[in-house]
Image (cartoon, rainbow, N blue to C red; front, side):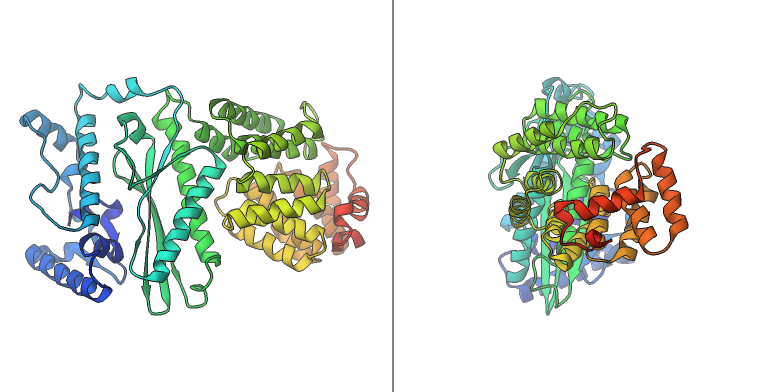
Length: 509
């Protein structure tokens, strides 16, 4: 009951419960023990037995029918006022399972923090101890699994989720098994990753949840069921989609720290806010994002931040034609070279470097090597998948490039770089001669981000090629307002003459 009461939405996977009560038993024994336990709980609840909800994979408490004392700040404050000693969570339970003991120690520490927060005399203490610059902590908990295959998936999920978060910005990675107790100010900016899975027949169920360390709230709980065709492939779409959903939820939590901790500067939060702020590609928004990431790098020098600054300069140079902005290809190159010197094993740094080498430096061989290294280091990184697709299109592997571009775009429904990845999906589709599909993606991008010019340039050409001359003329007239030199004829000449487009369908238009 306590497991469910202290969980997000009062819900836990059956696998998680079995692992924390009967981790030393075989799957069949644990299943039988859980069934008997559920029966006894319902019997004890009597007329309220339907408060305990059961499904094939989860157990839950009906949220509108339970009250949890540990979650009620007023109740805890009243306990503080009435008692000289603090009560201990589940003091009368003695369950001899290592996983339970680890959980109960963690939750008792959490409850002590809750009591501190409810004590008016202590509320200012954590803030006064908090340093000006703060690094979020990502705590890796042990995976919960009931079979060999599930354990393999858990290991992959843990590794790729943590790497994706850390590659994008700065977090302090901590293993739960070796961590010391966090300082009060550290726990406010800490969150815990738990992966879990179960293997029943030919189906594997996998999940990943994030728990906020300061209050025990679960702010993300992603779950996927893998069918027989997917369980042999650790890079299946559902696995990578789950990883990216978890990563984006973690980014949202990091960004929210700025609101919760207004007196602290958090480099990773600044970077996430910068990338999320690119709702258009105006001079103002790009410049603002660049200044935020520059400050993030001052706080915590990271290769990722320098690569993002190089990434932004592709838009400064390509979309704005350097109007009203002071930058150059040399500055862009300098950022990416420095990023690679700092961290040449970062999948995001390598992916952005591949993009720059493919589009600007036109060093296709080097671009392919960088993109392949990025994808090998983190096969769940949509940016790496996207740019690997683009480079393959440029070397003439048109079908492979198209499929990689399409896959990356499908994986970035919540991504901070969705517009760039969408443009690459459009570009790889057009390179493979799929002009109608390229236009469909282009129209999606235009609706989502009207200020993004690159897709529109290609759209004018493709509409013209498909015989929709009126639509092509509308786009040409629209783009000529900010850029009088734009013409469909000029875009056609570019694709015919650009060395990286030589082996694509666009070169023959």
